[in-house]
Image 1 (cartoon, rainbow, N blue to C red):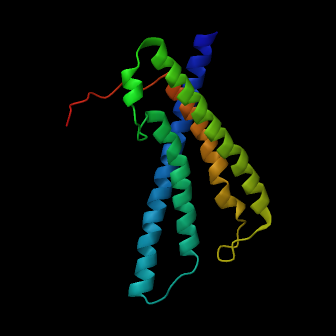
Image 2: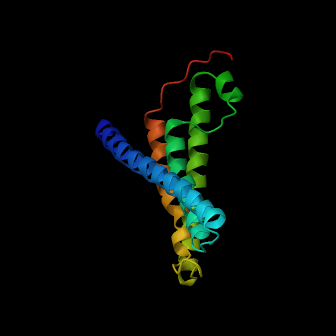
Image 3: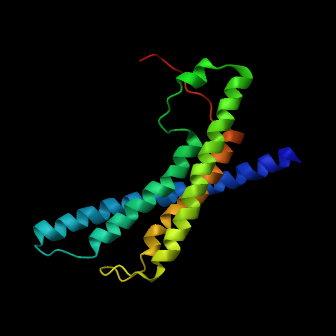
Length: 167
């Protein structure tokens, strides 16, 4: 039963991590293209476009919050692992479980309060884009939900440790 849950959860993680990887990459490409377009319009055509700045900001916000899930999954966050490397056996596993629990609490907090912020902002309209501000705030709970899946998957199936070359 536990093995079936693990396999199913890791299959869900492969799907969601692939999805948010593509979504974050598309947001990055859109932001880069829009920034170039904005520069072209402002300095070459001498015509500034008002909607490009908030659209660029929203693309970058989504890129960061969706990309966080990928970063959690592959374990690419900056780590101060002196204590973890020093501990052995059950003490190391206990520390890893504590870190897992604290990370899930943080992401749960982000999801909960991000959802509240999204709901509060639903009637505020971005004057330039003409869309609800809740679309921007929705990146927080959406990113947190994907990150929760990634953190649990990382705990169930951690990536192989990198070889430390000492350089």
